[in-house]
Length: 337
Image (cartoon, rainbow, N blue to C red; front, side, top):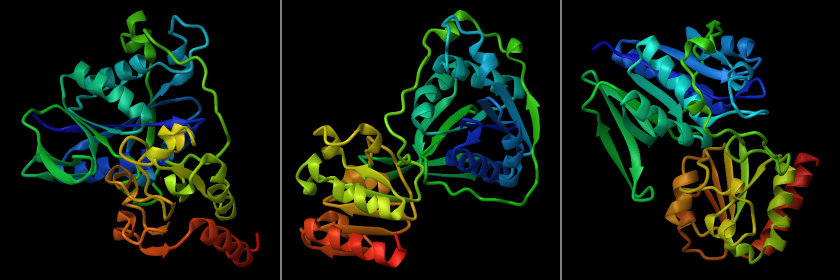
């Protein structure tokens, strides 16, 4: 069986997330190694011009399903999106395009729809992959196990494969300024039924306008060393000076100090910013699994033996309540903020 790849990419408000560029870049690389073609699929509204720009990352053809048109088929009035419907669209498109390899970013949406797509397409399923390559015509996927303590390589026996890519691990690679051709898919040809809209999201409430920790280039995170939620102003003040997103350890989120959307780690969000500052975070393996690929890590902790220092590029041993305010003041002077 000849191979073909379908890369599903996410958009929001007419713009593609960084994960989209990661998936397209990896699809191009893998297609080159396998000697096959690949198409890109997206579901969104007003994304045609942005879809053309995916050509800069190697895409030659982008298939677009209009989100408003898709939602119009829902039995629920006011539907914004439906996970089962998204899965059906991806599965049907893969079959019609003759794609036996499907790549999806392991975002919140990706984690929700990927297992559904795997079942519908009868595909072998590997989630949270951190590396991909082809060897002898076979795909080898690398993924972490035991909370990131080890990595395993997986080889697939069947021809049909679905792989989710851990966000912020794969690097987007621009290969020029080429424009991709955009082909609009008719939802009427996708055999959608009421069952495909068995659940639907009708409203998304944004709790704050803060930067998304998964998309941020600079992140300042806090842990239990801050002693209580009232002290997270240290994190927020430093983040404000740097134009950074705020993050938190699992212990802090479980204690109710910070919202789950800020959690970094194995059971939170995987991040790979240019700068990651960890304040009062000891460095449990679950946390390290979600941020160890950061380009530069700065750790502030009073325990000189804290595991976080083993992966930190720069470390400050001392009381965060003394170091962070002084650090913030100095940055204000340097940055003129």
